[in-house]
Length: 123
Image (cartoon, rainbow, N blue to C red; front, side):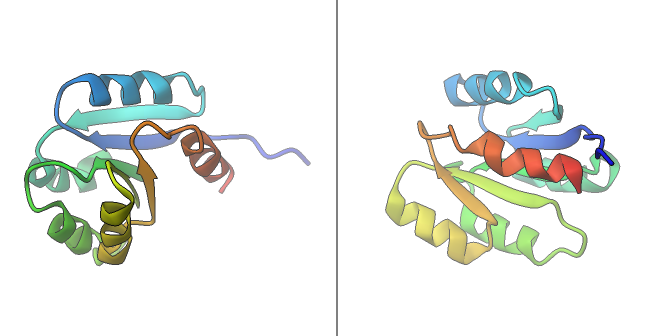
């Protein structure tokens, strides 16, 4: 019996610019991905989590707001989406993991992102 893949709903939180545009283009190349929103304000994004119902939240953890506190608060929410964060440095990556992100990718090294996302389409 073959399992049919479903589209994975992803919400991106990143400031407008090259990283955000590149991330959107990179993820849209995957037929299993549905980008349901792009937000630059983490607070507004959290307010929309119930209505958007993303399975995955991709977050630029280098946003100017207190991203570590935001990740921690999000990580303890019941029924929360999977939290995938992007960081500039290995040191920051470790802090982000400790704050509660499920996975952290270094910016510029996103080749493994699809292999982390795609299995979710079959769950």
